[in-house]
Image (tube, rainbow over the protein chains, first blue to last red):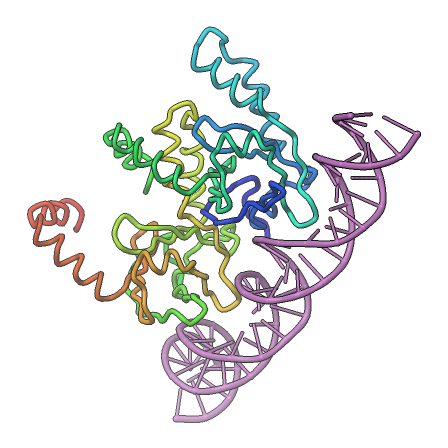
Length: 154
Length: 154
DNA sequence: TAGAATTGTGGGTAGCTGTGGGTAATTTTC
DNA sequence: GAAAATTACCCACAGCTACCCACAATTCTA
C-alpha cells in the first residue's frame, strides 16, 4: 500500500525513557521515503517543543533558508533556533531517536510526551505545555483562526 | 451504477464492533476515484461527530496547510489542531475503517452509528446526538436554515 | 424464482510495536 | 595508561494490530 510520502498526521502518546530515548510512531516511519536512511533531523521548535524532520524535507528547508533575507529579524531568529540546534539523528532498530539533555530541557519534557504529526514535520511536546500554548494562541487571535478554518477546512 | 466521483449522499445505519471498526457503505466506496488507495482520512468534525474524507480531498487541505508560513504562531496552532486529530486510515478487505478510542469518545459513539453522506465528506454520528444537534440548530437559527434551503435546493 | 455474488459483522492469530534493560565498544577523566 | 563514564547496539517480551477467514443476510442476475 502506498500512501502519500513524508506526510505526518495524528496525535500519539509516548514515553521518554531513562536514557532519553523516545519512539517515533511506526506509522511515521512507514510514511518516510526509502532514501531517508533511517535518519531524522531533530531541533528546537519555534514553540516550546521539539521539531523532527525527515532528512529529505530538512534539506529543502536549508536551501530555502539560504534564500531568506537576513535583514528580517524573524528570519534571523528562525535561523538561529532551527539551524543552530539541529542534529542529524538516526533511529535504532526499535525506531527510537535519542534526545540530548539540552533539547529535553528546552521542551520541558518529562516521562509522558505527546507526538503530533504536522504534515511535513513532527512535534514532541510536554502535554501540559501543548495545552497551554494552543489555548494562549487561540485566545490572542481567534479571528485569524476562524478565517483560516473557513478558507481551508472543507 | 456510476455517479460522480467522491460524492456521498444518503443516510445509513451501521454498527461499531468491539474492536472499534465500522463499515463504510459499499456505495460510498464505489464512488471513490481509482487512485484513492483504499484509504480515508478520519478526523474530528466541527460538530460532535467524526468526519471521513477520501484521501484525495484531504491532500488538498494538506497542500493549503503546507503553504501557511511556519513563522506565525497562530498558523502553527491552526495546523496543529487541523492535523492533530486526523488519521490516515486504509480500510480492510471488508470495507471497514478503524476508529481510535479518542475519536469514539469525542463523538460519543456507542454500538449503533449513523453514517451520513455530506457531498465531499462522510459523517459518523451517535443517533441520539445527531437528533439533538439538528433540533438545536434549527431552533437557534431557523431563518439561516431556510435561506440555505432556498439558495441551494432546486 | 433460484442461484450467484456482494455486503455487513464477528472473531482468531501471526507478527509487529512500544518499552525496558543488558553489554560491549568507545570516549573521557585522572 | 587504567578506571570510570558514556554511548551504541542488541535482546526480551507483553500487548496490540493488521490481516485473514467464516458466515449470515441481503442484493443482483439470468
